[in-house]
Image (cartoon, rainbow, N blue to C red; front, side, top):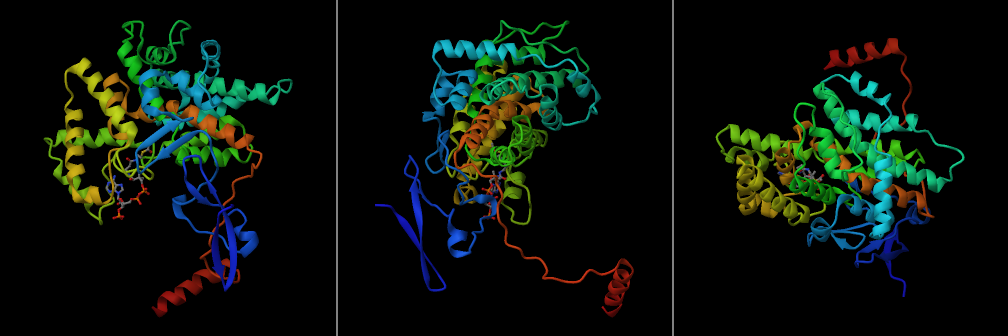
Length: 439
Ligand code: ACO
């Protein structure tokens, strides 16, 4: 029997249908609400609103579960590679060996970036943030790789998807080299996706880069853990912008802009800055913990808290382990990791953090890992963006393939002034002055 919820408006009863997600999540379908009742809903931050039905990623914030296409992220982090996980997210199934080989060949074929694009990179001010550069460059890809009318829509999408996955990685490394004033290192056909990235970032004519397979594995895990997270801020941005049927490059560029924010992808950089500050001040964490708890102080403990997870973020647990093993191998120990673990211990015992259900999120340890790999601080969020690409792409594809597709256009509750007359400019000052004089 179809389940419904009953709402009573001005004494009149309406019934709204309910649907149930494949993991038992019960949802009220309000899509007919305005038509039937004339009412809209208000939900700041969309905390109670499902904007779509999706088959891609399942998150259970109460139980700390994250699965891509049904597969637990812990299993993917252990056994998969970023390229294989990207294939899974975008195509819905793990690839066969043949499919994976073909996908890798395509990624290799599309890894070069148009030489003319280097001029753009060269002309950004040296102080420009790499996320600003990346979002502009991804948008510019459409101009360098325009649509070819003879190709079918499906072929066009496939090629755009492969280009993005492959070229964004090349462009990220390229922007770093140009920022340093060094010669650009080109992708190599004999290296895997992650090894290629590290080589493009760190190889130099005077110091050839030794590829360390443990770092390659760590980077794969980092990217797998970031590959999708259902309807987060940047993915929602990709879907909203994509809903206007703009090209995929522009939609992804919007996602990169959203991810740049310190409350989203920028948090991993903020965590390292915060932990370094504690280190500089002799390791005393108490003042920052006190500030985080102070209602009158906007400061937040970075890398803590999450809109969905009200328990330990499963990605943070894997990240912490990888951090431990990489740092143990590279340096024996890292004072910043010690401080982060100390902060976690103090916060998890503190009634404020317990009562607010604040636990470490994925960003809490990821910055420390990236720093150990040698990634500069201002590139941290770029690394997150490369990781999130398969998620953005698969979510965009799902939305444009949805037979019930609609342009995203929320309603609002207007709380501004009622109708009033236009005041000519000469009268405005006098009116204000007279009012001020009275006061
Ligand atoms: N430190 C201290 N207090 C916090 C923190 C924090 N990190 N996070 C939330 N709170 C408190 C808020 O002050 C608020 O307290 P109150 O109810 O007493 O006023 C309560 O917890 C709820 O906070 P909201 O901002 O309403 O929670 P929301 O779900 O909107 O925000 C967010 C989630 C943005 C992640 C938040 O926890 C935060 O700012 N964390 C720090 C930044 C961060 O680590 N971002 C990365 C997120 S993961 C990702 O994007 C990959």
